[in-house]
Image (tube, rainbow, N blue to C red; front, top):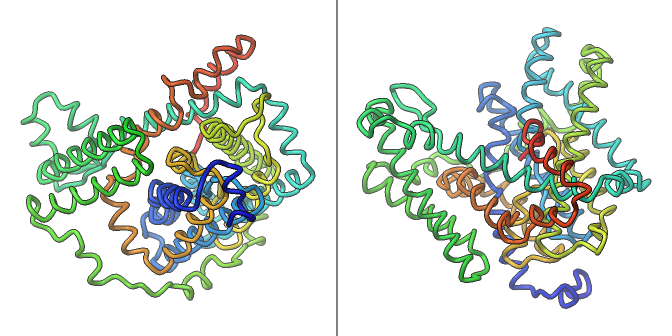
Length: 437
């Protein structure tokens, strides 16, 4: 391990890296179920396609992360990007409407766009062009992307947390429908039977959040992981005691056998070039450029922001092994296209592992192995990640801890750079409109 990952040189050890890898995985494990839900209309397009995208998510995330571990020796983890997957689903739906193809045929046709994007980025990364593009971006903007993502996540956390459905409709969100209700009685009547679930979810949200903040204040490594586990246990107990439901009911009918046959029939190497050309070349070029630009800035912001948090940047604000990291990112996208998922990118949740002490590729290796294991233990992972609730509660902590908006992180690093201040402010304002996880 020492020879492979240079643990001592990076001021870490095996135990810390293992904990960091587990922490990172737990903070982003929601993508395992959420990505196939978004790409298949929550299973509306058939269980076989859902299973194919589920396996593709696990496999592509693992392969991309392994490349990051061994090529770049960085504690960054990859998975299909949030936002990019939603945009991809919209593109697939529009292709089906325009061409008359089925959703599956349109899905396989649109996957060519992701493949082209990945190949373009792979070539640019190998030729070192992509790194030159990164270096050409002013430092203020590079540092501004991270807080911009944080503000977007904070907006998501405040605006669409929980999402409860009931006989009266939905989704009902914590900020809008619970805290924003005119009176407590009005909120209860509006949500109907979902009000009890909302109360438990809000309680879980705050207990988990304050657990993370309290442990972080005491410099406890793995604070995010412990907070998530605390929230999960609290929610399970609340379901059993107050909602009178079995939180483990889904395990009774769960299958632990990976549905590789469904993947082979729907997504594995199912690239529909014939359907792809029906889209129209102008639309194709526009979509490829759009995906490339979004992924480029997403990756830059995550790598630079997280590397800054881990003190991995040099005096010029550049990250060592950036080229290898970008190659790993491109490999993940190509793998995702060939297996059946949207653009794979470096996840901002990697910062939670960095905060837990992760400094080398061993952190990424651990997370990658856990992604592969989820092929077999997905029902168990779904139980834990489903009770956070979702990643939106954790996103508030991301803003506080990952970016250190009030504690010397990238946002404050902008202040010594007056020449780029206006650019960074503009970047922070505009980035959420087009960004990602």
